[in-house]
Image: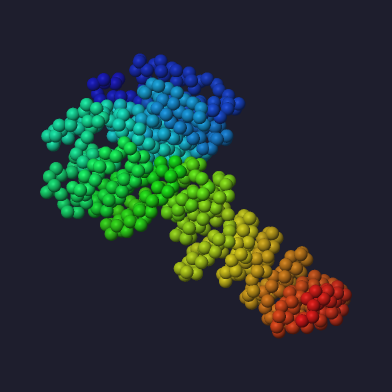
Length: 629
């Protein structure tokens, strides 16, 4: 039995497997009856399914507070919730919900409403500043359980250590995203018991009377108030020395009396300024603080505030302001952090990486809806400042967007980030997440050239020539042909042995753009093999066309020999197609200038004396086309 005098009894009760108190029996019966009702949601509309999901969420929170995770009722509720999400996400991806105080909105329609603060899912989210909540396709059962568990834990009166945002942040969901704006800085602060206790603590420690009568009276000294506005915890403030003589030199904040007076003037202008101006001032002060040699915990706290400023800016399409903050992190903070310690540097790099994680790129997707085409350059500036780790998420977004202008921006950002990490770019190509293009192959080859041939990266690039997907191999052949890079030829020659005729054709077309003796030698090695005559005539012609386009004078003696080759009487005509191919190559060479052209024409003239009529006529026709020189 739960002991009412035991402050831990309510915490133990939700995890118990025994019988609940009598006062909860009606509620439990209602929950049990709910899951026993048979429902056919196959014909439900999208809105109906979302309404059902939110109602289930509300009830699932109660189930989580009453039953252990091994209880059948708990398991049935979570399974029911999973099925509803799956049914809904076959039609909608993502499910984006706008959170009001007591309502949840989907596409301008109210899909949930409950004004009971103790039970309302909307209020539980809204009170911690969550304004948008998104569920993405691929949502797992475990994510659903952890999300409901976080809502349930944040709802308990006993839970004072963590708010909902902290609990959600710790879970780091892959398929659940949310946006946060503080609603209650002014409206709720005066009624907050923790804040009252904090003020009383300041009163007793400092002897300064800070009575709470209205929000306007909640004013501390300049430095304390500024710190509170930027999200520093009361515990950190209470640890600060009261006497300025106790400060160490490296801990001093570089704010003079004139600075404080200027800040006071700024504060007086707050009521007439836009929120964006306040963001500029806030970030300016935060960067000023970051210039100090601070402890890791303080450093991390300031960086987290900057990260939280960037998130809503991106989600609302203000990529210009978000870029300014990210630029300062890269150009100013990283060099300073490098001087402090590897741990400080890692904190900064982690923030930049998180801004470009799955949730971060999901915010980019939302923010793109607010961007006019002539301002897409701001988006590109922002994306190119992210970590290369953002490439997989950007490739995912690239597949989802249909506007070619946006696709171009995403593609350019991927290329720019790929220059910092070719390995991640190769992975995107290997998995098929990124289309094969000449720009990407060029980037990889240039990196090999400028940084020295990286054995692992080069091997991975060559392995694309044997990728299981023919489309990838075809894309590689096309891309290599557009580059005319010295390293491209060897890969294209490998593709001539591909089992897919389409890949071989693309490779031959690309090789025709080169003028290289080494490629000519590689083509001849294939042509003089016995099995070459087994290829279709169209493919043989492509081989000889590519050979002629290499414009190599060294090939003429071999082509002359092929043209003059004779078979025994029982094999007459067996190699006519090969001879016609040789004549085609000689015609390409004969259309050039200089000694090479003369030698090719002489070989064709000899061909007009061939015993094979088909060869004689072909050589005569080619000589007519190229004309006298």
